[in-house]
Length: 137
Image 1 (cartoon, rainbow, N blue to C red):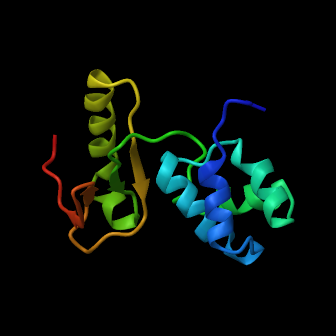
Image 2 (tube, rainbow, N blue to C red; image 1 turned 90 degrees about the vertical axis):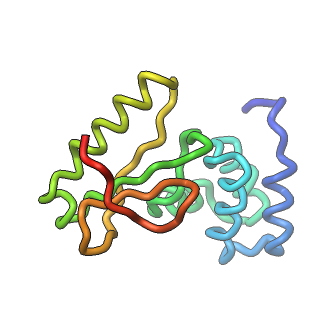
């Protein structure tokens, strides 16, 4: 375990939720909001604080799609891959975004999600929570 890791955020999140195991989702959300992902160092610390197993915390963190165990970029671009979007060619849009971003930066944070309006394909950007129809490449 990394001895230089600062556990302040993890401890504060657990304490804010009275160290209740039933608050694990809210606690993980707070941790991810700060770090932009859930660091591996969080699992043993949370397990001890909440009195539950690391495996249980890991299963929650990996079950929900919005949790990430890998660092994400400051901005996340999501491209729908639901049936309507897939049929209307959302994958080429996703691949183009990944290629364009990779050429400019080392880490990309493009991802797929499966909920979108009837105006498929759709994408969302960080400055707007609303989905919009992207311009094809």
